Image (cartoon, rainbow, N blue to C red; front, side, top):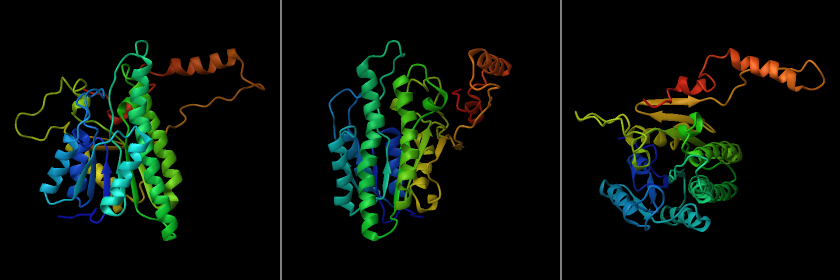
Length: 313
């Protein structure tokens, strides 16, 4: 079996269940030594007592298959615990090469009903959690690059969502966090490229504890076939992006699900208007913009989401 990640070490956050678990197993299958991070709270809203059991079980599964893995019980939204996570990878495996950020929680509510804590908690775990681990990993790679006098090996794979791309009415906190993760990813890609580090983001669609409501109407196959919503459809892309083969892929956003990978282009200008005077007036803007939107077929404001097939169902 080909092992393109042999000799490399990885961190996968939120790896005790669902997508993170599938990603950790795939990285290990491809030869990486893995730090399996999970805070282990039972509630998908981040409630309940933290437990090392989910992370330990996945690490044990990797070791049983002949790989190397250690578990880490830690909250990536805590700056110091994120530092300790990166340091654990360095202490255990000599260096860190791959960072996969997957940890997250849900606290869904319409924007008019959402509390401050529901907003803050989701932004903290998703967006700040991504930043915390990225910060300490980037410090590690920058220091290694300076010591080596040139580029080193580094890969970051972040987890965004179609909620950012196409909107999600009941998830303003989640959609905002996932949009912020894309901004963090592109900024990181530009900042770390000279050190040999790439940063990319994925928008995965998979049946997990986090999406059990979204996919409640989509039944799992009963004939033994692989569920099109299985996390195992997402994990191979993460393995590829973490590999040497993806050295030229940097600052990209990719949608992945059920045997499909779609590369998302950055936003393009759909129309441009120049004022006939020194500055626009209300009347001129009304004529230009209202007229332009009126001429567009209904529902085409976010046409890119239709092209990608992002709508569920």
